[in-house]
Image 1 (cartoon, rainbow, N blue to C red):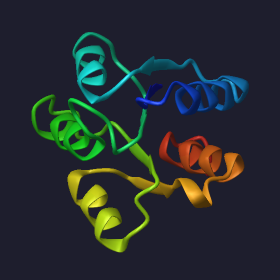
Image 2 (cartoon, one colour):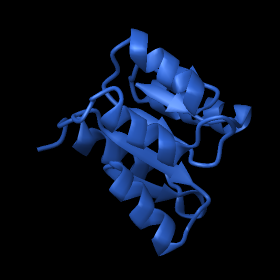
Image 3 (cartoon, rainbow, N blue to C red):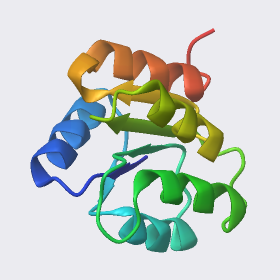
Length: 121
């Protein structure tokens, strides 16, 4: 699993939550770093922030779909951008889930990830 966030604190929080749940987690510092990692390593899922330098989460998701042709790779966007317009843009870019940080909850994140990975029937 690849966690992408330019905030060290958020990145480490997500890594900790996911590792505690038994996932193998790699962290990327922004979308450009994530694209480099995705070109050389296979991941089951990407959890990404949207507002990042170099390559933002919307662009990262679009490039995962178009440039890397990873149409089956689940992408979860976690962001402070709460508007319906941003949510729609994220889903149109190809994200399977859009979680607003102000409504973030560890259990709901893990449930979304389990569903996307097919671990919950």
